[in-house]
Image 1 (cartoon, rainbow, N blue to C red):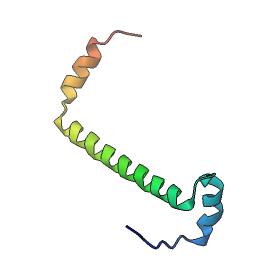
Image 2 (cartoon, rainbow, N blue to C red):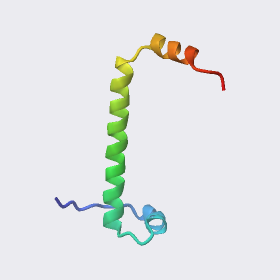
Image 3 (tube, helix red, strand yellow):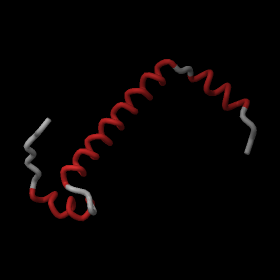
Length: 67
């Protein structure tokens, strides 16, 4: 899959400084992968939160030893 990207000039200096020895293409691919992973994580945590119970969580915390 190929895309033509138009990256604004004002990102050029920052992009060059943070990418290190990585190609711009690989840097962008990694950035996309990180973003997808973050969005999937948020989605999964929201699903788990809906299944959870505040009362159950508080009960577990009440039974936890003081540190």
